[in-house]
Image (cartoon, rainbow, N blue to C red; front, side, top):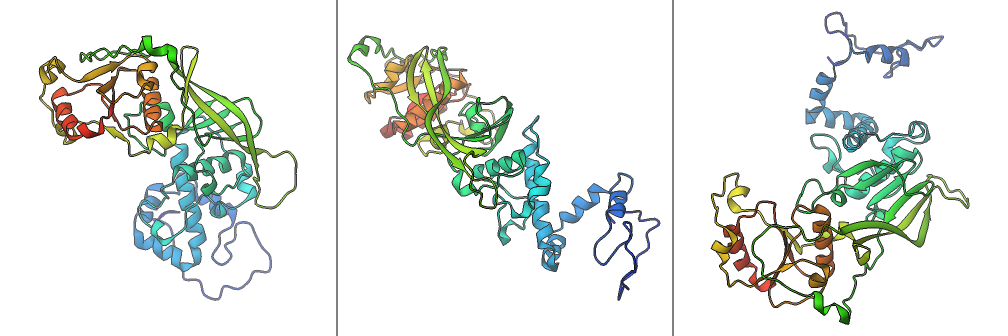
Length: 389
């Protein structure tokens, strides 16, 4: 028993319940309970959330409920559970009360449909686009976007909140949940709901004839250093904006409360522009690989403690990349090691730029096993990957 007291409850099968002459707020009419009774039963002393969760963990119970004509309610509960999972990672985020009165959540376009969704834990596994559509709807109360049009969105700005894709805020070596979205207090200085999208063809700086004196290519000595403390990433906006309709009904208005805003995510070295980045697309590329020691992958200690020189020797073919000019000059004569140790922002910038150049790369962890890496390098020698330390 989920609602009520199992010690004092009495059950009856209702058949042919006569229609009452007058309606009272606390009377049960047919299959529905009045809100007064519902409010009382949902009080803490009468309601067992654990038993309700246990009931929902039984697939037969949920499928039976869906087939009994209550599929709409099951869909709404699953949508609410999915939204709750999204907002667990968004401390400080708010939900508009308009979402309660403006439309039914089971009519939201971000809610997946299909029989394959009726599987434990009875909440939808949302994609990045669906998560952004969910946030847009709950934050504004009126925005019901089709996720198919949000595949390129990497952030949303609304009021004093910025919702940004998690991979933009962490080291690219961290796999985590690629669909995670995080909340930041602030805004981009524009009113309404702004959905940030990257330009279609991000640009990369070309080397000029005066940069030859910066191409040192010192032999890599195995030292894990950070040569890119001046590297930073900035946001700026192009003149391109596309207004969106937020309501489910057609309305001809000039000022749209929601729009796509084309946003440049640019990497700078000091005050010099280096490249524009499409981070989300790059991180999903097959050119990105993360080196993990085989023993560590299996949950065991590697046991290899040899130094870089002991493994590769002095006459090796690896060179250090200690400035952006050395990186942008695409020489394939030797293996390149970008030294940005402990600088997640620079490592992210190099990862994305390498992919946009069409080159394979290997992301190295903080503690590199040189013995295992030497074996990996033999397997990918033909690819000449860039290693990001």
